Length: 522
Image (cartoon, rainbow, N blue to C red; front, side, top):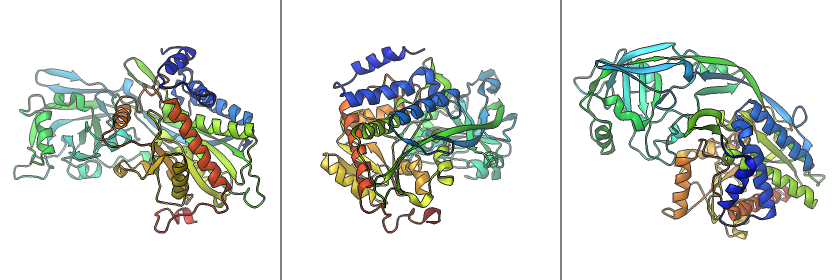
């Protein structure tokens, strides 16, 4: 178990570069309340999530927000999940000299889905540049193809985000099935902005109820992910090494084809069922008779990864900075408005969503079932992917050039000596990976933020290290060092942006040519 929450609070403060002010201490107190071990990582639909939900509702009530859900503050999203049961499944490599057992979620993982075979067996092969390449191509029928990561910038992003990684060699999915393969084993890349997550917390596919059939996906060849730290194990006895093949791929040279003297054998068990989880929605009514029926949405996600595969003995994925730090920002913003008596012309809709880590499920549900008239949602300022790890000098604005919100953000940033920049790594697809995307899909102008840095700076080192060591792991906890001045400055920036949008005469508009301008039929 980790330290008691009060001890954690003191130890975290000891790590701070500067003493936080009272508002920032209160903000941090909300994070402690929501990310302590007792919340058990707030997995979607879990008791830990429900405890966190009750806390947020209580704080919204204290801040004078009005309920804006379907039942009080709550909007219940009906869900369906398919969960891979690693403890009830086995995987091994059978060689002439014995059997080597592998560990699910630590060395190898498989996507949870309906129709997953109870068992799978086949000979391992390496097809180099594809099962049809070369004059002496090996017959792929029934084989299990080991694949290298593609030697290209950003190749690891898909894996880090929970998708199968890009690979070089035999096709995945339906392409693999057409080649006659029984399955593929794709070795994760070790590079990229977001290194792959190992151990994997768990393997689960969750959808909004009524779309569960999409989890079937059983027509293609099954694709496994493999931890590159153990990849040499796959090539034992083949006359080739993982390191050798990686170098050939990185140099753009042809890859060989060869058999691997091992048979892969796996048994796999999944369970499925229905569940539900709530969005928490409150509103601060606007003061202007003409504009009060328009809503500026401020959003963040409450869910984390819950309890999963341990890292260094720690199995609670607290999600302190992904994302309850920014649920805390919403609470603090509501409290400051309440205490100051500040009146905003437009209404502000506080949207705390569930299931973001499972595929933006809560925000998708809200977008399909808004609790206020859809045409009255005029903007979304979304909080995710932030993390005040170093002084705030630069902010990356996600969706900066899609709408007039970009100009508002530039003006507020300029007044606070914050440089605003567009996304310098669009290959990571951050615009589609957080809840702003669900609102943009129904043509609500939206924007989000990431702490930025100068390339090659010490801040970039801190940023990259956080992704390598803490992102989507139990290390995203209350012991994470953070910069209180940066947190305070961002929270002030956020408040000024929202207040500016809420008080403006004109609502935000899409820029000509934006792909989202006519989304959702608006």
